[in-house]
Image (cartoon, rainbow over all chains, first blue to last red; front, side, top):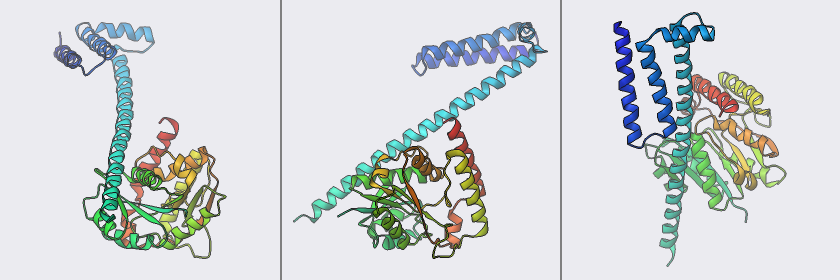
Length: 120
Length: 226
């Protein structure tokens, strides 16, 4: 076994443990747990038995096993990037809504206080 | 008596805000300044100059500030709303002209255009004209509306427009979003020529090239995905 395989397996096990931890704390849905565990299990399988990528590569018509791993990783990175981008946009919009609601409430309170002061 | 309200979004504009407000109160029943999380005295100065101040706890961008200002104007019973920049580049008289145009009742949306030829000579610096033209072309391709000044901060909304507008973006790209709303909601529009005052101060505050590119990318993204 090469060093890179050991690094890969250790990292995947570590990542999977983080996923489990987050799930137990209630920060993750069941579906997300399943998908992430599937992914990291896949990484462990590839770490233990690198030939699986070659098998998959020939199935999909890609030259080498390493290539297919690269393609899939990049695809996944792009997807996650897109997901976090839209998530940030959502949060941005929600934050604006909170800030706005607060600002308008304060304005109305201020105006009411001023009106009360003017009244004899 | 119809309520005319001017909305001014302000972020760290203590150098100009008091004068802008003092000018604006002459042409409106009320002036609302949205202090967009300024770290200077903008809010206090605006209040002392006679504005109603709405304060964002944290900076949210000009689009968000305009949204808040328009909502505040509605709550205060506005019949027409004119938005204006806080950096002193707009003349209060021009806000008055936009109100007059809205008062004729045949349009829901009025743009104070710095590039429409009127009785005043256009005085926009050349590189601004170029950026603006790019902004106009992009606005045309993305939203299908052609205007002479898509990036103008001086614009007027009728009661109906103010009640129905939905601004989803927070930053500078909201300038074009007004036009998207206009098209989606079939508001009738007219442009009124205005004069912009370019000082070193207002020039340093406006859109630079990189902000422009960022805005363009965001607009394209939002048009096709968001």
